[in-house]
Length: 309
Image (cartoon, rainbow, N blue to C red):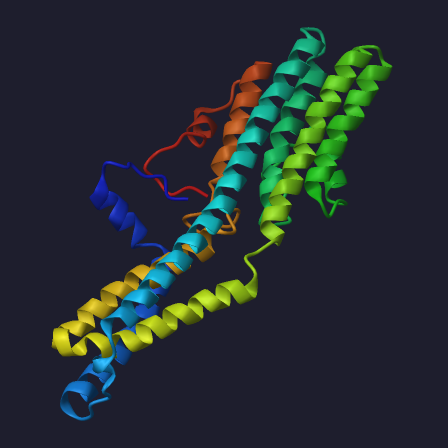
């Protein structure tokens, strides 16, 4: 994700135009440029298509309808992006609450248990991040006791495995009398939230914008750009070329941005910074349990004018 300073326009514009999405946009604009140049040269020098006599209200009406579709498309995509960020905000708070609760219940006399819960709670956001990105990678996870990571390898759904480890150790503490029944119920509610968060993220990821809806908007944009040169060439002449390119840049760019942010858990520059959010949780959890992480790990959790994933 591009984390930027809102008051620094030049830096923000530069960062935006160095991403893969904009490079794809420029490739599409190159095709538009060739098309518009051919149309204008033929219209002005060889063949009059007569479309310039079409009432201007027709183009204006199409523009209004297209604007409404683009607004709805953008809002729908951003709703998915924002829901993903809000869900990860719930994850941050839940992990902190779990760490505070376990730390208070365990007290000062069980360092091994504290270290176990420190690492396992910290592992969950990294496991969820990799799961959402379809990455079977346990390198981000900490080994709690020998064999725990090997056990997670057996899970297709690694976040389930991490919560299972937390749940099993919690039940063991209850049987040993370390935690009471009331505390077990409270911890159960918090552990349930972890899997609820995973389920919400999976729902966002697995429910894309319907194909027919997305296709219709793309078709409408293509038609609008396709007829626009014919209808303004009489008034603009060769200036039709930059005029149509500007309109195409806005319309096609908005559609491509919508496609990018509607799946917020990927690796694109405008997706959510899941690694940074996971690192925030790891730093917070270690701090709550009283373990000091190296400065390099603390710095990885900080926001700055950088691109983070």
